[in-house]
Amino acid sequence: MPNLLLEVRNIRKTYGKKILAVDNLSFHVMEGEIYGLIGPNGAGKTTSLRIIAGLIKPDGGEVLIRGVNVHESLKNNRRMIGYLPEEANTYPLLTGMEHLKIYGGLYGASSEDLEFGARITGLGNRLLKKTSEYSHGMKRRLLLGAVLMTKPRLAILDEPTSGLDVHAGVSVRKTIRNYVKSTGAAAIVSSHNMLEIEYLCDRIGLIFKGKIIEEGRPRELIEKYGVANLEEVFTLLVRGVES
Ligand code: ATP
Image 1 (cartoon, rainbow, N blue to C red):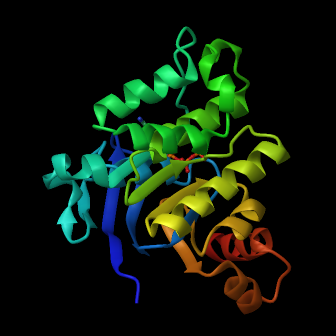
Image 2 (image 1 turned 135 degrees about the vertical axis):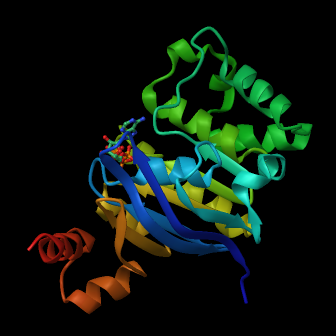
């Protein structure tokens, strides 16, 4: 039986007085599982992921990793969590390999970790080039390698395939799946692309206006609502919430 890795309990976050970005959101992730958080722009995905990564504090609720509160034990999280922000960029004058070394240095990566990270990027000799010469897809793969290099137990990946072409998107999805299935770690992946998430994730939470409005295995949800794909599940549910 896989173990429970992450528990998100009733987290809530308001920006200013009016914007309720995350509204009593709860879900859990097991070891060896890829969990997809999917929803439209502004639904609260990034805010939720930043709270789970320990970068911002929720106004209420708690996040537990293996039973330990993330916001009370930030040191413990350093090796447990890897976080790929949605808008992460690279330093143009540094090579891909220099990025891996700097990132690895912060996390105490071994030379094996560096090799592992380099392999994940799939960039081969291009790691020796300055990232100013990289395409968007190459940068995304480099940053994914940097995040997974130290083998975090929980990889938090905010829109890992945003802006990638079909080929690069497939390659990143394969990398995430291989990583989780070969290490027994877990990943949370956010996206508004419901079709790609259908292929990548074991379980998903559909997020709308800061709340999870439905959760389950993609196939089971599609069957439950008698539709062709997750996009249609989502459309049906949003209509229900708004009517
Ligand atoms: P997207 O898919 O567009 O990235 P998202 O689902 O990740 O969206 P969030 O970025 O979490 O959504 O935003 C949720 C809500 O909180 C939105 O209404 C957004 O405008 C608001 N918001 C997010 N960050 C801030 C901030 N720093 N200050 C004020 N409001 C914010």
